[in-house]
Each structure stands twice: as C-alpha cells, then as structure tokens.
Length: 487
Image (cartoon, rainbow, N blue to C red):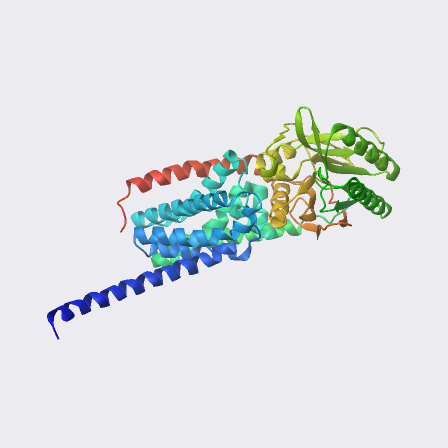
C-alpha cells in the first residue's frame, strides 16, 4: 500500500461522515417543516397548530447558528408552500415566490431571535420571546398591510370554541400569544431540561385556565331565539361577457330562492357579494326589482352589486326594507387584489333590521379588527356580510369573519360565492353552514341568534395587547443584540 492511499482514506471517511450529517440535518428540517405544512395554509388543522412549531424550535436550540438558520428556512419554506395553490389564484408566480420568501424570513427572524435570547440568558422568562415576537409581527401586519394579517396563525383556532373565547377578552393578539406560548414552553423544556420546568408549569396553568374559562363561557351562550334568516349563493358571476339570457336566468334564480325562503318563514335574506357589475341604468333596474321583491315578500333583503359610472367602479351592498323604500347602501372599504381599481368606501352602516341593530360589511372588510371594533362600538348586534371567496380560502374567510363577531359581541351572517354560507353567534358557535354552488345555487335557513348584549373587553384590550407586544419585541431584539453570539 502506498503513502497516497494511506493518507486519502481518512479524508474519504471524514467526507462521508460530513455528508451523512448534512443529509440527516436536511431530513430533520423537512420533518420539522411537515407539521407546519398542515397549519400554515388556508385550511389549517387547528389541533396540530399547538405543537407544529416545536420541532423547528427544538432544532434551532440544539444546533449551531448557521445550521439553525438554514434548517429553519427550509422547514418554514416547506410549511408555507401549502399556500402556493391559493396564492396562484391571486398573483403571478414571481409574486407568489416572493411572498413565501418574505414569510419564511419572518420565521427565520423569530426563531433565531428566540434562540439567541434562550441560549444567552437561559432563564424562564425567555419562554415569552417566541410568542411576543409573533404577536408583534401579526399586529404590525394587521395595521400596515393592505391584506392585513390574513391567514394569521390565530385563526387556526376558530373552530376551537373553548380557546376562541380568549378573543372576547384580548382579541387575536391574546389568542395568538397563547397559541405560540405552548410550543415555546414545550421546546424549551425538551431542549433545556429542568431549568424550564417552572415556565412550562406556568404555561400549562395558563392554558388550563383559558380552556376552562372559555368552555364555561361558550356553554353559557343562549340558544338561537331570533327570527329565521335565509342565505343564498350562486357561484355564477354576471360579467360583461355573460349572455343577456344567462344573466337574466341568474337574477331570476335569486328571486325564486328569496320567494321560497320567505315562504318558509325567513324575515331576512342575504345574497352574496358583487353578483354583477353594471352601469347605472342596469343597476337601477335591479334595484327596482328587489325593492318590489322585498315589499311583496315582506322581508329584508341584502345583496352585493358592483356599479360602474363615470367616476369609477364601486363594490356595494344594498339593504332593502319590507316597505319597499330605496335601499341603504354600503361601499366596501378593504378591496381584494382583483379589485384594486375599485373605489374604496369609508362610511359605516348600522340600522334596525328584523328587530336587531345590524351592520353592513363586504367580505374582506371583516378581515380587519379595526373595522370590526367600529361596528361593535356602533352597537351592532349582528353583521350582514355578502362575500365572494376563491374556493380554497372559503373556510379561512368565513372563520376570520366569525372571529370578528366573538371579539365584538355580535352574530355574523355571511353568504359567499365560491365559499361557504355561514351563520354564527357572538360566542363563535357555527349555527348553520353550507358550501356554495353553481346554478341553481345553495340556500340556508337558520334562526338568528338572540339579540342580547354580550360582554367583551377586546375593543380596548386587544389593540393594547398587540402594541404592548410590539414594544416588548423591540426590547427583546435589543437584548439579543447585546447578547454574546451563540455557537
């Protein structure tokens, strides 16, 4: 055996060892990202959200800084890829990739900042770093972005009735804090051992109190006692290329559904958003038809319609009264990506409807907590929400709107094309639900929730909690910069 062969063998074995180590790290990062795939998309698994971030945090705490960085990015990118199909409905592929990259970088920021604080201070209070940073980011997104905090991790709990009651106290910031505190405590306990037992115990007690209190509050919710409401949605859109006969058939089908539901006892009818976009003359014909229909059936009717005149296009909700008077009109304030050329409204509409004070909003409007609070402050006991979803986000759109109701103490009626027809009460209970469909469409008949006042604190405590976390996040980031870099 010559000298060169003798020297080459150890380096070959060392190279194989490094390769095996790298492959095992890649496998670990992908395994850590898989649970995130099922909770970061538009149809999350709510129960999994409580533990999905644990593997990512544990890997970061047990790895060097560089390895923690690329493994976190890989895991987060895999998790966020669950949004690709939905994002492609709204934007071109380069924008989709950019959006996922930005969100993955946010994960990198939060996980590395958490890791830095935990490894530097090794104290129980560092369990707060992960939840505080995420609540801060969520609060800033809600306040600054045109799409708000769409898809916030917190909304994954919209079907968890017990913990959802936290939003009546502290809004989405409070719910998100609890949801992130649990995996933070578990990851620190797994990676750091006994030093974090007290923090884990406190977290467990806090979660137990939240679930117990929420269960009691939800159980105390009154049974539906209001008049019957009917919801209608036909997925077919009346656009410029729609043949007149087809357009007339769609309008006729809506009228038949209204008459049928009114015959079954419905006093309130809700139709979806932007059934058609029409010039003023054609819109006037539709208005006259539904004025007469409301008078003939002795019902309140809400429908969504687009009107295009010389000033531009507006997305409107019309509320027709049983007396056949001219409708109350509400103009959508928060516009979806496909309607950026529409004119945004700025006024609110609350009035007595079927014996309750009801507000008008349109689809994306209810994704914003500030608008929801404004209607709560105005005394709304129920919200009428025509909507138009994108199929894949039907659950998310309905549940974000439901959360607004819990935050502000009102029921929500939401009729969505390419989405879900939903009636929920002020405690977040889904009283009735049905998917929309194409012609002849879908209908839903359900009793309205009782109009009694529901005590909530989120109107002032939710924004206070969110911005307090923004301030604490700034402090944590400064503490991290002063920390000795971890290996």
